[in-house]
Amino acid sequence: MKHKAIIFTLSCLILGLCSCKSTPVPKEIDINNRPKGYFLDYWIKEKIDIATIDKSLIYEIRFSGVISILDSRYEFIIEQGKKKLPKKSVQYYCYCSSTKEIMVESVVITDPSITVYGLSMNSSENFVNKTLIDMGFTYHEYYGRNPSYIKDRFNFTINDTVMHFNFYSGDN
Image (tube, rainbow, N blue to C red; front, side, top):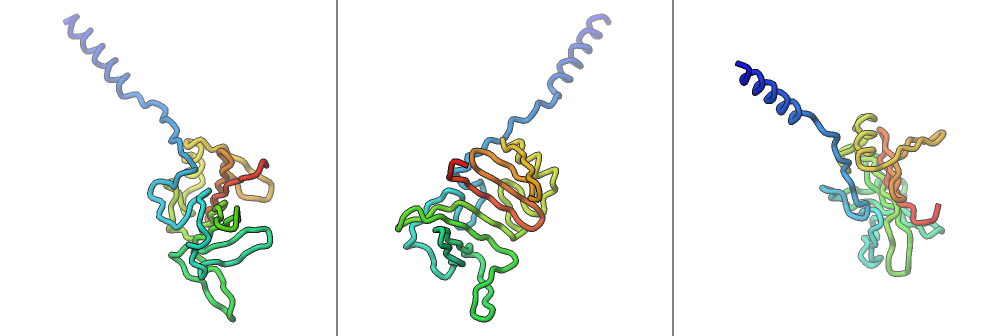
């Protein structure tokens, strides 16, 4: 009887230890690579040959060398002969790094059906916070602006109207 009690106690102890949940290891990401399942035209830091860009998707060219491009899955709204962005879209802000190529520095998503890193504009604030903190981002809140998550010069902002990914190439 004493042996049965010892075996039972040891069995319970082993089962108890085996069923303990460990703290999950953060899902590390490399922002230089497209996220898993990302199917849009471009990603952050991607260099694009200017000759390959569909000129009909260019929204504006700014004097600062920034070119705004609409993702090919969307169409502009034409009102009084001028291009307007659709309410739901994906837009890329690219910096002219040379006369032959541009680099994507920002991706702005206003389409709630798009998910990146498992997040969308419909994700709860708690889910966004947990997911990004687990991925190694740090949370920053700026006065009068949406909270941001920052990692390796990569800034991610999300709310119920926009997801904004930005890469800071400068020293700031």
